[in-house]
Image 1 (tube, rainbow, N blue to C red):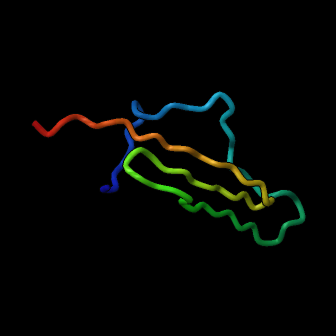
Image 2 (image 1 turned 180 degrees about the vertical axis):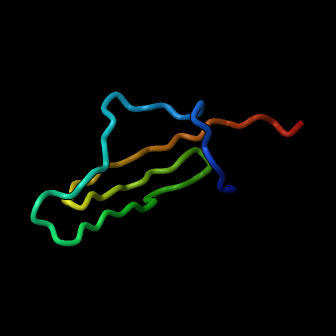
Amino acid sequence: MTGGIVKKDNVKMADDPRNLGQAPAGMSSPQSAARILEQDEAGALIEITCACGERTYLRCDYAAGPSAD
């Protein structure tokens, strides 16, 4: 699989989109992170951890691209 940029026309938003924003007051050094949990030709599962500790999971389903014919 090769990397690339996903064009906006190929992105579908979930019914409940989330904003990754500021850490709660009182946190001295916010640390957000994202990591790929699973990835294959069909898609990927990404775990996003907010500075507050909340985890969000993002599933990317890859559609078949145009043929090279």
